[in-house]
Image 1 (cartoon, rainbow, N blue to C red):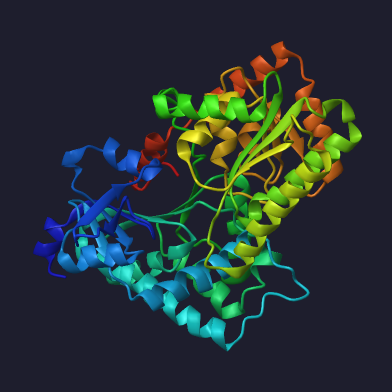
Image 2 (cartoon, rainbow, N blue to C red):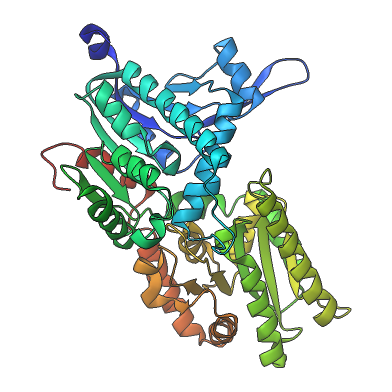
Length: 468
């Protein structure tokens, strides 16, 4: 790339698999665009429209690919039309079926993983996918620009980009946990080393908690001899309090709140969970813990309802379809065994509805967040912010949010169904005054680092004069 081109390029670039906009082809052949939200969107907005920023992302759907072919993209976004089969191998075959499983420690190790010839074929697609991002970023970045690469989908990009554009300031942020060395080393040795060296091409690596950062440092020390010149930072993404409080009192949320109250029944307490049917979210054990509560404390029968929103995730993977079906089976079994004419013990919804989720947040007496392992878990932070009457947080010690919220939550071992049932009983019987005080402290901790500031802090830290 010529220096004149580099001088005219973007000054701040974000790279992520999913971008801030998606497209759909309408029946008349026109394209409709849908904009997303989240911390990155807030962060890029916060740096101002004059900052000359660019978001590089992948086309994920036929509508996205058609938008790229028509040149219909939005200003400030470059969508890459990576071949669908290459993207599927990289995204489903490697990122979601290998790297995600490693970092969340999800493998049933007597049978999996099996890193065979098919895995190696898919790994080549993962390299191709990462290279497409690196080349696009190299082409678009101005001289000395800041590039912030996102997550486990793009672990090779920093190293590839460093070779193409040594002048750039490169950051990478991991939104997942990071596996401890003994688990990370399940990956083939050469692949594990390639991932680490790819990440270490960055000037700075960001993690959600000190625990995940330390795990990466341990992996680097054991497999590649340390961090080299790469710096490490911790940025605990917080809930967007202003947005949540405003959005949760709009008309559509009020309507859903009324509908949920009617479904639950007058005067009953609520245990609320809102999750994707992601294997790591531990929804099935949460349901089993609720069933155990009804067995151990029959006084709660007809007096409490478990409101469980389990929104389907990654249904193109068989193991996720099976897990979603298991969630539904267990909920139906509980309702069949314990339900009465006037009481449905589990109110389960599987169709994604953000307004309904906010309505459930508002009426929660107890928030159940019990993941096997989670990078952060924003639900744990959002529910105390939105809850109308205050809620008690029952929180897994394996959630990243535990570092910030554990002191004011009732903490559980996510595998211990009996222990979780006891925690639910404790939460339901907590005095009103203590619940209110805990909620206030939880909300303060949960909003300490707003999404826009979370992004800006990473950007500022990329400046060589800033401490890591």
